[in-house]
Image (cartoon, rainbow, N blue to C red; front, side, top):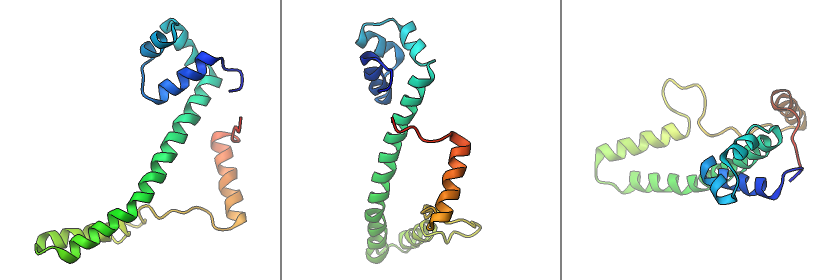
Length: 137
């Protein structure tokens, strides 16, 4: 992984799993100070942040895939419940999720990004300005 040793690579995975620096040091038979030094290294930090981002992206994708089921459940509740208050609450939840919430100007969760090459290039240029070009190592 681009100039990281085997213990550093293992430490990355452990950090992503939520282990503390002390736990990692103990598992890898190094001092906590060594682990602390790794966390000061730009290469180590960037790799760690990229791994964290991959985990978050996977979680986001899983949530998006589960959202269809959630909407189906809400619709079934709204159709089948005898309770007028539950029916009303469910209907309002569905409206909120589709962006029809009073007082809100934006639509929740509907951002799909650029749909033309020109707009995609503009978005990518903005990301590069904010975060630098992607590191595909």
